[in-house]
Image (cartoon, rainbow, N blue to C red; front, side, top):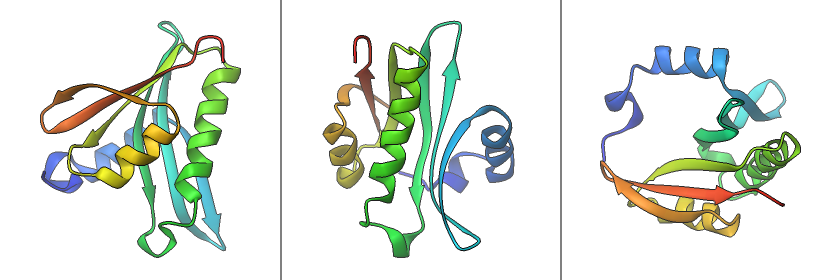
Length: 122
């Protein structure tokens, strides 16, 4: 699986996230140490998590879990029907994290596992 900067133009991707995504961020001092970024489509009541990341030295400290909780709570509070995400097929730690939050594998596209979480009634 190629790294993100081989798949997309990082500058354009960052601009898109800044402009269109709802961001759930963790900061330590003046450093962004964790991020979950998601797009919420009001028309379809659907959402897509485009990025889940933590600075490596803060990995394993529950930061991604806390940000995922915030993202899911936001989606529920705004009555979205579900959340979709894609994750590298070999990223077993991330797949385990998403599974812990009730995401289920629904497909495989271009070496990435598609996972969805239904929210209706939560």
